[in-house]
Length: 353
Image 1: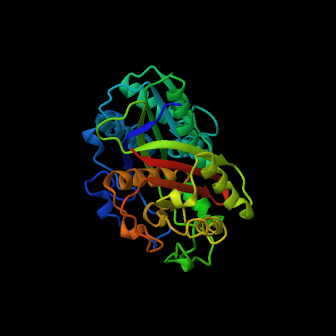
Image 2: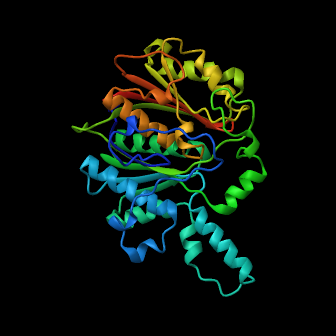
Image 3: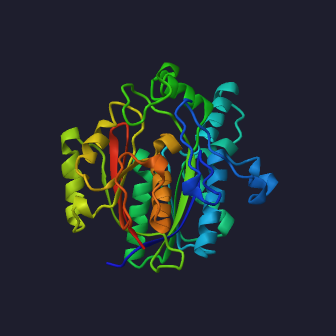
């Protein structure tokens, strides 16, 4: 089995992740219900006539993928694979509003065409004139992990040498209203959120797009080796330790071999219990969390993967992410554990390139 490398990583998020010195400039946010992404000047990357017709998630993904390909020195990837939980929900809402406002008559197809989940991967391929394998995964919080798995198979089977893999999700007004109504998002009274010791349910919602170039060959600027991925749709709390232990054993590792564990604490008291259970396994590891920096959303694990890549490359662990005081002089193996509201559990193992 050949090794697969993450040769570039790019991210648009609620942090200024397109700038330099990313790990030094991370700022937590725990006092608002919904946090919006810091967007670049799209006119530098996309013709103004096209910007008008693009939803936020397409714009974010176009720019993030541009940066990822540029950093990897790749003009034309062999495949484009994108994971998304909500897809182009902005255009979906516009289309449905048109249906209601026009009494289901005289509808223009534009919003419907642009509302499908695979619009992002399609638009990137059109921009690059890439005719290779093009696929979109819609698996709630494990959408990126399924995309990574597909890319691993493509490379290891010799079907591709360089694969552009991304994850993206946007916020829309109506969806956020519904999330507030069904208590997915925290109530004002429960703010500021205590991410690590929360006694209330609900989360602070974010958004973003993260893109990576996976390659068969290691480049000069490679971030990490993508060692393995494990996904489980459902998991009982008591099964958490076994789920992680079996994954480590499969990769000939023990808990002591993991230098840092990045956990998806979201401030939701019910579902965060899984992360607390997982922490018990890693007495000698640096324990980190990240959703106080990114917010919770379907593909928030893209942000944690991006940060993990920088930790491995720069050999620095940001103070703002630390749960315990364990410090490692050398970070070789990082384990990422994520789920959304207790479903779709994923483990990603990264190793220093």
